[in-house]
Image (cartoon, rainbow, N blue to C red; front, side, top):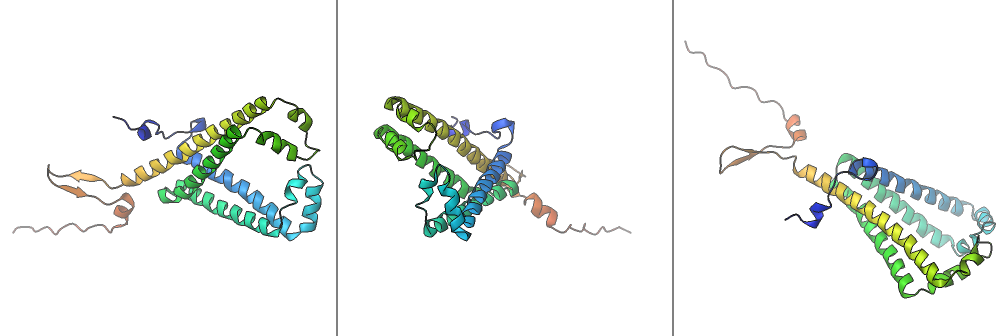
Amino acid sequence: MISPWDRWYTTSCCLCCHVRTGTIILGIWYMLINAVVLLILLSALNDPVQYHYHLTSTELGTDFDVMDDANMCIAAAISLLMILICGMATYGAYKQHAAWIIPFFCYQVFDFALNTLVAISVVVYPNTVQDYLQQLPGTFPYKEDIMSTNNLCLVFAVLLFVGCILAFKAYLIACVWNCYRYVSGRLSTEVLVYVTTNDTAVLLPAYEEAIALPPKEPPPRYVSA
């Protein structure tokens, strides 16, 4: 009987590329995003006056006014940690080290759980959508048109949007998990088994270790007189 894990296991992902290639691309993409966020936060800590001016002149300035230096330092530390985790996943997929992919996979599962809680909160408390819209600044585009929409339609639209995000995140989680299984399975098959008899077997070393060993000298030949 085929287990569910083996049934959904595949070595290809979107655009028909390998799961290793998809994991490397995903890790680099996350690193770029967090690097941009880290650069913005460091620029804000370096010149807080100019940063506050630019934020207050934008439409979402009121949401960032509450961020003080302590919160920015925490956000910068989180971005730096995310860059490290994504770099580990990229290196692990490239060099085929399965253990290096685990932290990035755990982050994906944690992020998926948080988005699931958001969807559940929208279902349990549908009025939170209207409360969130009222907290938006007055210059937010189409705010009045959105608030005039029926609350049930708003909840359905939010659930549809969050559901699409959850489906996409679940696909990325499956891609990283298949990459981990591929790398770990490839490492486990590097040890070859040569069966000599029905009861005994000789374990040969891995290919890298075999080529590193010095060649053995042939035994001397004796010529009979």
